[in-house]
Image 1 (cartoon, rainbow, N blue to C red):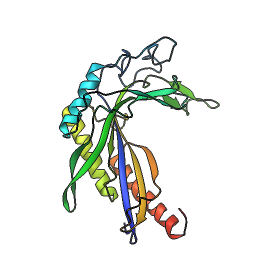
Image 2: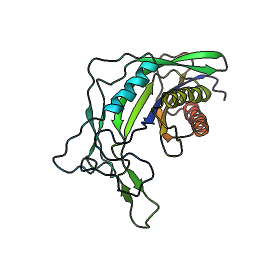
Image 3: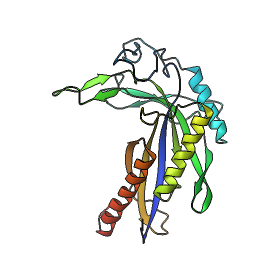
Image 4: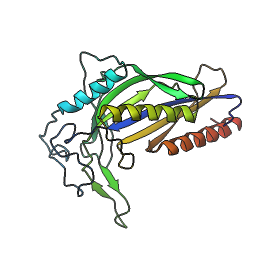
Length: 245
């Protein structure tokens, strides 16, 4: 895709669901496909007085990934509450990591048409997934399934160092191959075990100032992410060339 006077800048946030038997902070089963709300602990349902206990295997899996990308591993890691309202997040906050992630800066090599390229990884942190809202089962209201609430994720955040959709796909494939080879993720795209958010922006060619970015959420297909990024590049280019932001 020709962008002529514009540089494309892409960063990816990849959510890797860990292949664990139980959730990140509760002993409830993390098996996919069970009957709705059959795998919900008191903690997952946010009943008062319940406290989280971290899954040690999730820590081990995160460290395994960090070592595989040559990352900085801190002596201390901390969890934090990320407050927002989702109907399928009963606590009203997500337990995630902010200032002290379990995996620091690392890098991974991707294959491009111009040869190998190294993409820097800002961080990878542990967090719990939300539940699932089901909109098509009833005509007048939305159902909530909390089986997924609290399942363990690693979020892998790249530096904005990809400059076209094919590089983004190559990076996504490299992370996918790494986590499935390590055995920390089953790699089932259809079941949402590996999902990606793409941050895309355009800036004047040669400019050091990044443009306004748009985030494309919850992509779970290599083909779809390439199409979505190319569409977003085209959309932003049309806006910028018409004098908009």
